Length: 411
Image (tube, rainbow, N blue to C red; front, side, top):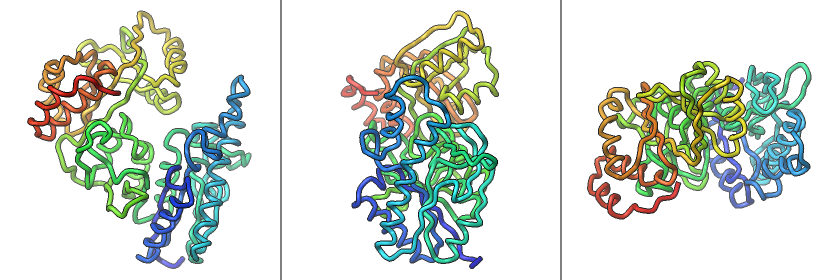
């Protein structure tokens, strides 16, 4: 080994979707190498549904035939998009004079368990990746995939898999940091599509970012955040299309006592009369089935939520535990304030009164150590977010303007 410091850069589908975008990637790699780093790159499949090599486009080839899709078949076709992306990106780097090699997850020796579609990484043998780095090459590695060691069958990691595999690789390489490149310049305190003037965070602690990501902030996946925290590797969320420094996610002091606001909407929400499901089962439901949960502060009712594409999973889960007297609410929004426990406690009544003055009904509310979540109608989502954000940011003038002008909202 050369003793040089490694850096992992992860680029999402939009970042590698066109030749122009891939040149931006090349520039980021060149810049990092010029600063003395050994650079490993992790890529997602190119583009989004409808684009020829996007993951959803490939999966639709199976789904359109009807019937259930076998897990192994799902993973076999899923990996194709990332393999294409890694190959094209490696070629783009070589064309610009940067030695590079494309590697599938199996070639990078990313080993997982045998849970097709939702696999967990159990080991990364960095021998081959490190050998390429030591030769001055850039390994371009497929995101969101690995291989079962015994059978050599391909697996995929589920939601946020490319983020997670990039951070796991960074931990295995003892990298100085992992850079997650996306189409925004960092982590905002609230979705800038709802509040365009939202403050961009310079830094955020692992714990707060984990909760922000779990409850709706989409810039980095919460499993990746937890992986970085456990391995002690900082994560930087940056834009592919600028040189802005981005947001550092690490063991740092947060800038604000209320770090930000995250939203999940619209969700089908099911309310069960009693808390029939323990925390361990609920954690499995969240990881494997995409079902979120909270316990109402006043009634102790168990509230479960899932997006429309997971509604079947949600209803099946409730049936499995024999929950009686359930109530099904369509098109709900879960709004979560993320911050320090004391600050959330102090704000709880004030925030509910604020929403009440906006004419917004709070149906359920959970207050935990780092999060305060309100369940409201999805139609009120944007108005509620704006009101809460301007309150926590101290912009009471904007709050007054919001009360007057935000009569129509979009979830």
